[in-house]
Length: 494
Image (cartoon, rainbow, N blue to C red; front, side, top):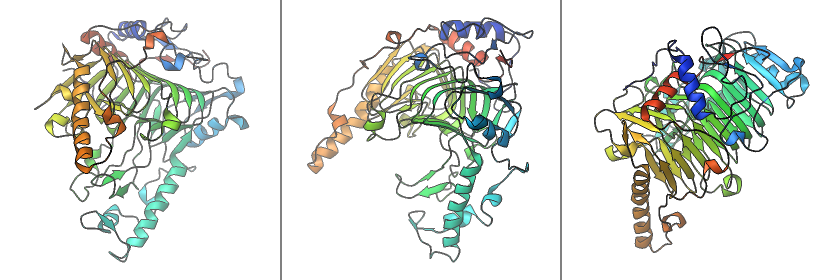
């Protein structure tokens, strides 16, 4: 199996990039605007324009998505520090006006105004996660301020540190913004990038490392108990028309496996989502990007009960992306009409940091999650899953979702019936729900009264134009050679 290098995630292969780029764009990004694929620099890298619009996917629907295209000269910013980035989002007092923000080099979300990189003790001096955990009695089931003399202090310091960190690392991208990396190594580490009630945002050519939440909280009542980190890497709340292209999202230098151990001798979870879309976010295209080495990867919709916010929305296209060692939520969808096209999914049961263990093996890992009222339209995706016990059930898991369609996908290079996998998962979830209701004399849950269907009620081709790669080799090659930052060339002012 061909895989990418974790030690240098932005390293690119020089040979063949231009050819692979043309294949990927011709197949996956039909009707691209001039400059997005048709020109190359002296090194063969395709050049892109700051005025590009999302060429396909849900972000191209309606008014389209072109971010800060046409920004006035005074609204074009080049930034290399967190303070400069935050100032640029304010855009000279007019944050919603079209703006272009170029990032040069790597910006650290924990960088204070004086240039110091803040750490746990800067946010909450005296906080100690081992002491925090020791204040839970009965193996993490009950908190008590009286367990030890320091418990009330640890509780207060954890909240203090979390709030201080939020104020520091949060970067809010307003409407009509294009955020572009100027160089191969342009990006952000440790920042919490959000779009909150924003419209028309473009993010391209950036490597983004997920923030480490030193003040993650333990929730005893979340299932059998769970860690809930606060900060996503990239998220959108009640926002629309977003195009994320040639971006790397990853835990990077701080894998969960290296975190402190908890009550169960398992690593503390210090990362939340890589890419979460919530509260009615709509018209999003994620293309040519990499989501790697992470647990809770991409959540679309935040609750089965949120039909008032999410019903009829969460329309998202995932086109020609790499999902590698993403232990769950690749993506997990509620309500949304989600197009999953020509993506390459890679995992192993034996990865040292992010092993993916399918439900058939007694684990909880999966790539595509069909949640309540989700309508996933999958086409020609390649899944490579290796290691002891690797099986097809890793491809799709149902979370009360009874609608799923797939055409032409492959598992380890061979055709796979994803609809059968999805149906089996739904039936495995439905049967005990029905039995429990009968045993208790209560009503069967509404979702469990349904039958599985491959008719999801919509087709992407009715809404936007796209082309398709139809062999697993073509999908692998296009994604491995043309996804992520550094394979496109950004020329300021063009």
